[in-house]
Amino acid sequence: MENASLLTLTKLFFEHNLDAAAQILENMTEDDAVAVLKSLPVSLAVKVVKILQIEYAAALLKDADDQFLDELTSLIEPQILASILMRLPTEARAKIATRISGQLKDKVSELLDYPVGSIGRTMSIDFIALKHDLRVAEAIEKIRMLAKSRFPFSYVYIVDDNSRLVGVLNMRDLMLASPDKTMEEVSRKELFALHCFTDSQDAARELAKRKYFAAPVVDSENHILGIVKAERMIHGVQEETTKDIQQMFGAGKDERVYSTIVFSIKKRLPWLHINLVTAFLAAAIVALFEGIIAKMTILAVFLPVVAGQGGNAGAQSLAVVMRGIVMREIPKNKTVQLILKEGKIGAINGLVIGIVTSLVAWIWNGNPFLGLVIGLGMLVNLIFAGLAGASIPLTMKKVGIDPAQSSSIILTTVTDVIGFLAFLGFAMIFQDLLIR
Image (cartoon, rainbow, N blue to C red):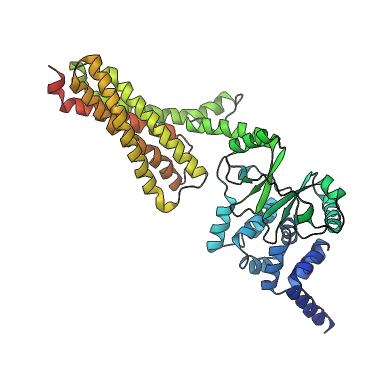
C-alpha cells in the first residue's frame, strides 16, 4: 500500500512539475533514475525523455529491458529517437534498433543515414548541452558530475526547451558569472553552426577561415546533433576526397599507395575490363561508318571534338546531380523533372556550341555542309550528355549502387557512342553534299 502511494505521488509530481522532476532525475544515479522512469506510465515517461538532456536519456535507455523499450520507442518522435541512438554504444544501439519497426524504422534510418562526404558522417557526439533556464550554480555542479566520466571539453552548448541550439558558453564566462544567473543570460548568442548535411570540404574551409578548433552540428530544425573538430575534419576531407576520386575512375576506395600489387590489381582489373568493353562498343560504332570515313577522312579529325564536348557536358550534369544526391536536394517525385531540365540545358548548350563548331568546320574545310553535320552531331550529343549525366547517378542510387562508383566510365561510354553515332549518322545522310 505504501509503495503504491509512493508511485502515485511520483506520478503526480511528474505530471504537475515536469521540468523540475526531470532536473531531479538528472541528478540521480542512472540505476535510480531508470527505476523511477519505469515506474511512470509510458505516455508520461515519453514526455520525461523528451525534455531530458539527450546524453542522459541515452544513458538511461542503454540498459533498459525489452518491454519498456518496445512501449517507449513506439511513442517517441523519430527525431528524438534518432538523437538518442546516435549517442549509444554500438551494442546498445543495435539492441534498441531491433525494437523499432515499420514507418518509424524508416524515418529513424533516414535521419541516421547521413550522406557520404557530409559532416554528419564524421561528427563527434561527445559534447555537453545544458538547458537555457539552468542556473550557473546548477550548471557548474552538473558539469563537474559529467566531467568525472566524460571527455575534456572547452565549450558547453545551450539549448531551449525543444533542444534547439540557442547559445554557446565557454568555461571562463561560466566561472565569472553570478551563481543565480541562467545559462541564457551568460551564454553567447553569436552562433556559428554547421548543418549535418554540409560537405566536409566546405565545413573544413569554414572552420579554417574562422580559426575555430570545433563547431556544433545541427539539423534542419537547429537541434544540436554533435560537434566537428578542425583537426579531424582536415584528415577526413583528405580521406574522403581520395576515396571519391578513386571510385569515380574505377579504383577501389580501400586502395592505398602502399597496398599490395595483388590487392590493387583485384580492385582495378574488373573496371578496366568494363572500360575495355565500352571502348570496343564505341569502336564498333565507328566501324559501322568505315565507308564514309574512308571517302571523307576529315570526319575522323572531328570525332574526338564531338566526343570530348559530350563528355565535358555530361560531367557537368553528373557533378550537379551527384551534389544534389549527397545533400538530399532531390525529392523522389522530381527526378524526371531534373533529368528533363538537364536535357534542356544540354539542348541549349548544344545549339550554341554546335553553331560555333559548325562555323569553325566550315572555315577550316570550306564546306558548309560539313559544318551542318558536325553542328547537328554536337547538338544531339550534348542533349544526351545532359540526360545521361543526370539519369546515371539517379539510376545507380535507385538500384542500390553507390552513385560515385564509376559513374564517369558509364557516362563516357554514352557520350562516345551517341556522339559518334549522331555525327557519322548525319554524315551518311548528307554524304552526297559532303563528297563533291
